[in-house]
Image (cartoon, rainbow, N blue to C red; front, top):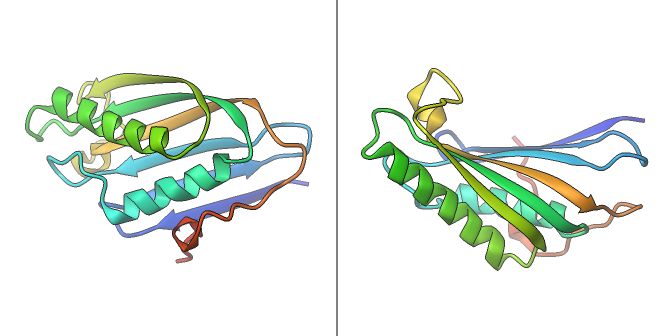
Length: 153
């Protein structure tokens, strides 16, 4: 039986969408997470930190994640390549401090050369993708605190 859990936190431009697809007991969950930033900023706003905490909670039951951070910036932002790199480093620092076991982290700085969207504000983001080396055989709950609970819209 397929079930999809969707967690959306905050309002654009600091909105973060997290989609966790649980296709069956035989296949691992997959995650696609995009963290949005304010224009010309690499600071993790409260909504982004809350969404990262939700992601950390979801990942806490698995081991040895392989993480790729696709860093973006809009072409109208100041120094887009450097800004995209700082955004990826901010996300990587949060994930590193979270306690989730990440075996490998790779940053791909796409800057403004490969936009996610034709809308500039949609490119003020870091797209996080994971490959799990191991996953649990049963679902487990995360007890990291109120900040890790999904926010309903």
